[in-house]
Length: 110
Image (cartoon, rainbow, N blue to C red; front, side, top):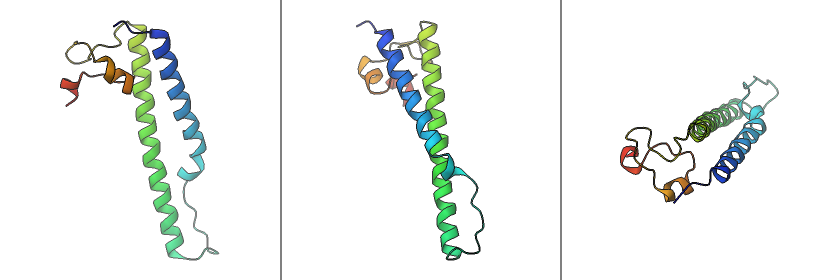
């Protein structure tokens, strides 16, 4: 089954835009936690630090996903999309439908 490159490209670009928008929205949550003497106390600061750590972890995952999407867009440009980057076999269409940024066939991914 041939790949509809235009549809795949649009889906990848849409996913990338969504991730970048989420990154912008969460920017404040990732900012350094300030010591506020007026705050309730140590537990509030610990909660703020925990929230910051979770926001930073989410941002790392978003950045990783954006890199995967950019790599998939590059593979589309070079006509390598749909082929495993490790063994060169076709990536199952169902796998690409679920994850259009997939770079490995199921055998090499496991």
